[in-house]
Image (cartoon, rainbow over all chains, first blue to last red; front, side, top):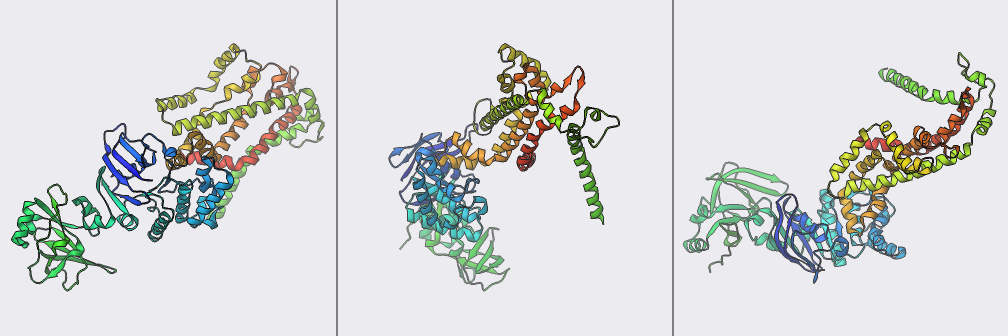
Length: 351
Length: 273
């Protein structure tokens, strides 16, 4: 089911804090969309609004062409997976999966058939008669997914479904979710604060901050062409380095400098992996090596510039030691330009 | 060595506790098997010499105990059922629903627990008299259909159940009413059973109220019926104890069946606070 938000705002009564501000977006049918953002950015609220558990203060919500703004969760026929699974502890696995069907008045034979089919899909068939308390976190999550899918939801909502799992399981489960989503074709909205999770499984990612959509695009575009400085800094680890245009302009040739100036570029962002070392002090930035950190195959050089700015650099050959003065440059394509408001400025490369 | 002497102290203390609990029961059963003379003898006779089992037969002839038993069962069953229903519904409202004045209302409800029960006897009696309910089952049952303590215990339990389960149930198409009966109640089983057990025991043993609001032998409950052995000529202790044994046995059996839930339920309310 296609989902559309039209100028949706959300304020919790009692306080004037706006959780979501005039939000509009479209989610395509059969796609998996992640909502990504730091805590308190409004991502869970967005999910609750899609689910119908919360009603927006303003604006309209459409499922397909139907206005569902005033409809509750049941009428919207959504399925939802919660962070702590929220399985019914007193019911067995199969009863948990059948519960939504029982509520919908589906007869016993049919609901059992459907439950067995779903148990197969999420690979939980051998635990059907256990209680949730006897299952591991990953197994409980599978049951929760099966339960959410049992009534063939118009849309599947997942609220940080992986954050209670340990790191190794999380990766496996994330691929499982993608597989299940592809097999069933259900439109899925996945809320997370983990960028790796969002980038790896989504068709599209919506980055939220302070109740506003920062960027809604394909995962790679998010990294390669961030719409603003928040997105640029939120994605990637170590964080992107940002420089004042004035600090770098000496290193540019005059035509580029003029073009950047004419477009009102104030900040330049460069990702840690985009630097290459140059001889002497001829590079774009020059500084003293403050620290070299080697963790497994990750090598991070922490460079301290003359103006005290710290720059993290990765993916370079290390032929220097701490305390050396080294110089780095980058190519034009690897630079992200932002104006005084932090928004991306598109500069065409000079021939 | 320290642990052995610690163990001894614990066992001695527990033994004293157990004896304190058991002696009255023993005394009741022993007395029920004595002759009238032995029952009141001084110094007390600890072991009945004559073993008068006929006391039990005689006790049943003095008063219509079967009728009392029927009354007790009806009153206990209906007032327990009523209290469980009101407690569950009220607890749900206070724990889950949002309505104007909820907190004030709940505070008021708790405040009523500060009023000594004895103070309510006369107003309640007058109310029932005006309703013409004296000497009916209504008088025995209706005043006991709700208990603030039960509402409180069940509310605490309901509140300890995660909000997410409520949301999940809403998503699954579960109405508030079905959520209450199919999710909350089964999950609160031990709290509810505790409440039932305490209520059953309390209701079964109630004496003052049934005594006040009934004046016909037909309407008496078992504990009130025990009075039949006290006449102007004195109390027939051996018969009274025989009848008391009969009154208490169902409660002991009941308690033994539900013991595990009672302890669990009380432990729950304690730690959840």
